[in-house]
Amino acid sequence: MKYKSGILWVSLILLLVLGSSCGTSRKVPTWIPIRDVPMKNFGYNQKREVGVYVESGKDSVLDMVLTNVIELELMASGYKPVNLFKLIHPSVKSSREKARLSVDSVRTIAKTNNLGWFVHAESEWSILSRKLFDGVTRRFSYTYYSNVAELHSRLIGYSTLTADTLFAFDQTTAGNIYQGGDTNWKLKQDPTYAVAALQVGKALGNLPMANEVADSPGTRYLPVRLVADVSYRNRFPDWRSRLQLRLILANDILEPQFGIKLKPVEILEWKHIASDSFELSYHQLIKDFKSDKSIYTLGFIHTLNMERSWEKMSELGMGSIGGQHSVIRAQPSMPSIGRWNPVEEALTIVHELGHNWGGVHTFRVESIQYPSGEFLSYQFDPINREIIRSFSDSAASLNARSRIRKLAELYSAEKKKAGKSFYFFGMTLGASVYTYTGTGEIDSLMLKDPFDIRDFFREMVPDTALQASAMAAYLNEKKNYTFAESVLDEAIKQYPDDAELYLLLSFTYLDLDREKEAWEAYHKWEKLTDNE
Image (tube, rainbow, N blue to C red; front, top):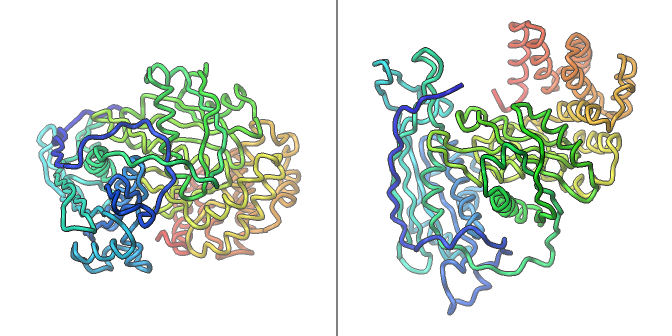
C-alpha cells in the first residue's frame, strides 16, 4: 500500500553543548564503574555509567519508549545506562503511580550511586484536529494505539558533581499523516516511538563517544556469518560496513545481559533475491548456507514495503527456535523521511538470535521478545533470560528432536513461573516442529496421519497441556484446522484454566470462518491473562 505524505516534519533544534560525535566505528567497551575512574582524570566521556530518569507523563507507555530510546542511544555511544526510575521505585510498574521528583533529588540519588552525570527527560503528546486532504477533519482518539499527533520532549544532561547543565534539548514535532487507498478514511500517522526516536535519538547521537577499554576477560565470543542478498546490496552499496555497525550495536545489547559478543567470521554476498515471504527466504538461507554447529548465519534482505509503511513492524525478522539461521529485513523507522535506524535493526538481530537460543514471544511490552518492534525494548524478560541461559550452550550440539525435548522441559518449568504473564510456549514448540519438517531436520513422513502426530507429540512433550497447544499449533500450520479444533476441545475439558489453549482455539475458529466463536475464545483468553 502506498502512502502520501501529509504534514512535513518539524526540523530538529539541537542545543547540545558537549561537542560533535566522534563517529560510529568503534570497539564495544567493557564498562568501568565510575568509582574506579580516578577523579583527577575526570571527564564526562570517561564516566561510562550514566543515570537515566524519565519524569512521569500522562502516558506510561510513552515513558517506557522514551526511556528505551535514551538508553539505546547512550549504549550506541559506549555508555552504560542506569535506570534511575527502577532504582528509586523498584516496585512501581507505571510512572503514573509515582510522585514527581525535583532535579536536585534525582542528582542526590545519582551521586549516591557513584554516577558522574545523568539524563533527565520528560515528554507529552497532544491530540490535534487537523484538516486533511479534501477538507476532511479527523480527530485522533486519546489512546496510545491511535498514535501521536504532536510530541513535545525535553531532555537535559546534568552533572552530579556540580550544578552544571551539560546539554539541553527541547523540541515539539508533529508526526506525518499518510493517506492510503481511494478514501480519506484510510489515514495513518507516525507512531509515538517513531517520533520519540527521531527527536531524542538524533539529539543524543551527537554525544561524544565514551573512551574505549579492553574487553572483559569473561566475555564469550559467538562466531556469526553475515550474508546480504541481491536486493539488500543493491539498496545499500556500503552494505559491509552497514552490517558491521549493526553487529556492534547488537553487542551493546547482548554483552551487559549475557556476557557474550557476536564475532563476524564471514561477510558474504548471497545470490538470493527476497520476496515478501520470510519463509521462502529462510528456507533458501538454510539451503545456501548449510548448518555449521559453531556458526550462526544471519541473512539480510530488503523489500520495498518496509520503506513505504511502518505498519510492517511485526514482519522484521524470522529465526527458528533452536536453529542457527535467521533472516533480518532492513527497516526504516520513519518511512516518510527515509531514515534508516541501525539501533532498531540491531534489536531485530538480538530478537531473532533469542529465538535461536530458545526464547519465545511474550506480550510483556518491556521485553525484547515482544512480537512487534514498536516499543524499542532491548532487555530480555526474566523468563526468556532463564530459558536462553539454560538452552543456548547446548543448542548447537543437539539434533532437532533433542532440541524439542529440551525446550519442552524448559517451557513446562517456566510456564509455571509465568503466572498470568502470557508466553507462546506451545505455539513455539508446534511452529518449531513445522519448521524442522520443512527443512528436513524432522522427517515429515513420520507425521503423515493423526496417530503418528499424536504419538510424536506425546513423546516430545510430556506436559499434557503444553503437548496439546504444541500439537494444535503444528496442525494449524499444516492447515488441518478441524483436527486442531478437536485436540483443543479435548484439552480444554481437562485444563479449563490454560490460557494458551483458548488463544489457539480463537485462531483456529478464525481459520474456519467462525468469527463469533473466535471472539468468545479470545475473551476467555483475555480473562485468564494480564492482557484484558
